[in-house]
Every structure is written in C-alpha cells, then in structure tokens.
Length: 404
Ligand code: F3S
Image (cartoon, rainbow, N blue to C red):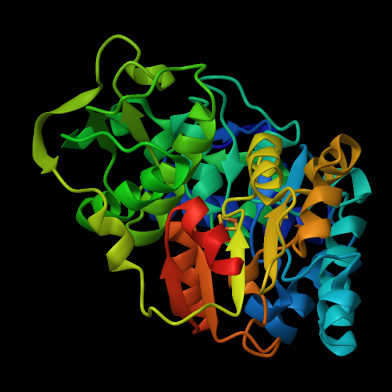
C-alpha cells in the first residue's frame, strides 16, 4: 500500500494545477505497479526521449503539452542527447525540416525549466556538474547514465522511462522500489574476468559479453586490473556499464575494490550465479557486421570526457582523415576542448567534435552513411538496431586508423 504525505495527496487531487496532478498520477501509478510503500524525494532528474527521430510528432506534442500547461521542473533536471549538434547541424548535413522539429523538442523542455531554461543534452550529466553523492536518490533515464550513477557514484536510481522521468522532474519524487532499496542492490551474478581488459574500448567489449548473460540483474566483477584514480578509470567504467546496459539491462554493477559499494566486500545475494570470462575480445566480434571500410567513424558513446578528446586529438595530430570522424560530447566539454586546442587539432585532421548529439539516434542513413565504425559496444548495438546501418566495433586506435 503506497502511502503519501499530505502535500503529495494535495498535488494528486489537483490543488497545484493539472500538470502537477498528471505528474503525480504517473509517479503514483508506477509506485503501485512496483509495490512501493512510499515515495522518495530526488535531488536530480535526467530525461530521455529527446531525439525527434525517436519520439516523432506524437512525442513532440506530448512534451509541448506539458510546457503549454505551465509544467515546471522542481529539481535540477538535464536532458539526454539530441539527434544532432544543435549549432552545427546545417554544415553536418542535417535537413532544415528535421532540425526545426528537433529544436522544437528542446524549446519545449527549455520552457519547462530544464537546465535552468538552457538545456544541455548529454548522456553524461556527471561530466557536466550533476554529480550525486553516494546514497542520494535521483531519477535518471538514460541507461548508461543510470548505470554510472548507481555503480560509479553510488547514487540510487531505477531506469526511468521517458514519462516517468518527466513526472519525477515535476514532482521531485519517485517511487521507492528497486535500486532505491538496500536489499535490491546486491549482485546475483558474480563474474570472474581471467584476462583483464586494457583500454576503454576493451571494457566495452567485456560489457557486451557480460550484459548478454546478465539481463537485468545486478552484476559483481572480479579480476579487473583497475584502480581508482588511475588514468581513464572512470571512462573504463563508463564504457563497461554502458555496454552491459545495452546488450543486457544492467542498471547497477560492482567492481571489487573500485566501486563505492564494493570497496571492502562485494555485496552479493546468498547464492549468486557464477560466470567466468576468459576471452573478452570476443565481445568485439559479437557487435561487428562487416569488414567493409566505414563511411563514418563515431567516437564518444557515452559522450566523451575531456581526457578522451585529448587522447584522440593527440593521435590525430599531423594526420589527415579519409572519411568523416565524428566525436560526440556534452557542449560544455566541447567548449573546454575548444579552449584547450583539442578541437582545432581534430578539425585540422578532418574530424569534428559534435556537441549535444548522439549518432545512434540520428537519421544516419538519411545523411548517407551505410557503414559506421565505433569503439563503443553500446554505439554499435544501437547503430545496428536503431539506425540500421552495418557496424564495425573495434578498439579506439583501430577505429582511427580506419578513418585514415
Ligand atoms: Fe549516449 Fe547515444 Fe551512446 S545516448 S550512451 S551516445 S547511444
């Protein structure tokens, strides 16, 4: 039986207007479906369903209706990536009609007060200042961000759907079930990795394999040669979690001695299933469709950190690319890369840094791309299943070489 505070009951009765009433109805319905006893206050929300290519005209009307009714977010709220760079779309080849529709989605969220009225679309809100503390309740929607919030930051969130996240943003509440509860955060799949992955993309390949077996379970991993604070350790976890969330539906994982809830002991259920991974490199093959040369190379899934951009810029210095290379990141990260000179280096080689955008949810085929190479398992998974192009999933340097 879901119990509500007097304030929550008043909102549900419509005392604060129709938008908040509808948002409360969604939060309460989700709580009842999942058997929650109460609601919890959330300190931030991350909303998915932003790409016009995904949500279409019906989704745009859905968001605009909230905005027209005066709905305003009650807690700090950020947006998932859009289908294009909101500033450079024309020079990248996006059609004006599509761009106007995508801008309309962003404008509706801006009217609702997302990012203080200036949306910053990204799947890595934690790289642009939204860093919840361990134990803090949030309501995030994007699967890789959910994984990172739960696993690397130790915050607590379920994988919210689009309407559920909007409702959480308007009410500042979510139902207390699933990963908001201590007992649901124990791993029921214990994975022993025999040969440790090395670079960021290798963690993505490992995650692709483990996610397939794990499905929606909480996973614990041992055998990774990874220490907190080493170069790119957070990027490796970002890649690992994104891949497991894509090929499975893993929303929380623990790495022995690294992630906050596994620093001393691994939180396990009484009888976890055990899995040994000897050959994580096989993960690359599971998400590769072709040996054909790519007509686009895409790096930055999840959105790249400044360190990842620096790594690519260093490799491209003095080289010239044969085919387009797009590296996606949050706009504030792009601006930092511009200030550091990395963007100029990437451009001089023939590549582009894209802000705001995710290539997997872009109209990739309409842009003329048929074969895309990427160093991300999640990117490969969605390029194959959403964008419907042929994919080459390979380590970072191999992808960059393919672009030469
Ligand atoms: Fe982000 Fe798109 Fe990858 S949302 S995690 S860049 S598939």
